[in-house]
Image (cartoon, rainbow, N blue to C red; front, side, top):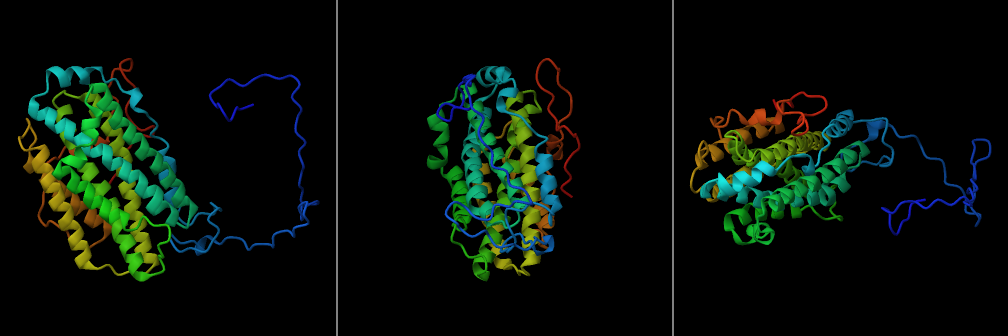
Length: 378
């Protein structure tokens, strides 16, 4: 029997254990009253899946199927094919690389990318768990988002594992978002936009509140995860392409695949809400969202890449941000690209989501999804 005070303790064997008496309820002998003669619950009408809605639904949130949104359930099934922990990846070479091979400029990039990510994924975890998930009124949506909350926690562990393994000062790294203005700016923008809907009493039947929620979720899926995360790993991948910090980069490849799915799911949900609620978005609010995000990214880029590293520069990074932002705008169906004419400056970046079996089997685990295939953003 499980010891609830110490669940890791080995169960004690007791030959005198008495089997509990089980009260059976059958169709022919339903339990209609409790010991206090409380009347039975009245009969409820079956759930019609067509009555489900992403938000503001009136159907039973506890009834999973039949599905109205089978694509959400497929997200959950696919997410479960990417099981890993940071302990699966060998970091020994990264320690040597950091101490003996990285230049001061490369150390600056590595440390500050991790410093930003450590805070961002905790913010992402809280946003999905506290601001988004509870407002969904179809369980197939909530179930994937529950997995997403776990994945954000796993990503946070990954960054902490890298920081600890390399031997960085955790107090100093974790506090950079508070003391480095350029990192703080990005976190502050995200906090302000996401905190505006992180309220359990928000009334999404109010059109103004609904609009604010959709813009906040659009920012989270399209920019925070779809641009800032997606593009944010690329400085580490640039090191990996030169044979440096390969353990860290391998872990970020796992995270990148999660984030690709997070962004794709969020974009799908946003579009579904707009359709179901017949919502017209304020174009000025959308333009402000892109401009604010770009300015924060530009300041951050100028800090982490104030001195370029071999094969990677501030111009490369911000150019790719603009290109990816246009892609997200198209996926959201916004009709207008925020940065017309932007071209990819990192044609190899999408390949990072397609991890291949190129490892020595006895050196590390095979780094690919169980099903293989790439995720197509287009």
